[in-house]
Image 1 (cartoon, rainbow, N blue to C red):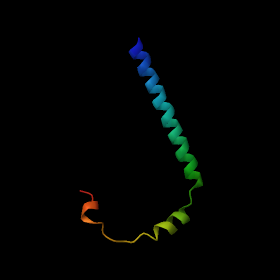
Image 2 (cartoon, rainbow, N blue to C red):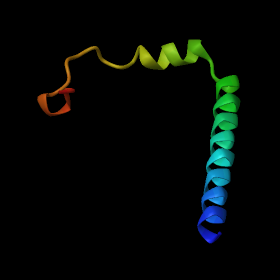
Image 3 (cartoon, one colour):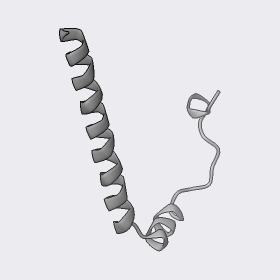
Image 4 (cartoon, one colour):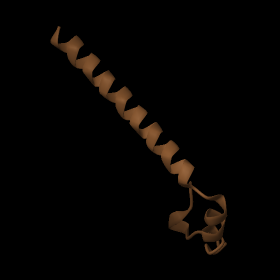
Length: 56
């Protein structure tokens, strides 16, 4: 019985945390601004990454 209760509690906590994460993402998305993002991204140099930084 303890294992079932513990498992159910863990699942409920997981679902709650996922819901909180989704809510946080939605709130941040509403605050976002594509123009500001593009402005910041334009300052990043367009160069090849170092060998140790390349994806395999």
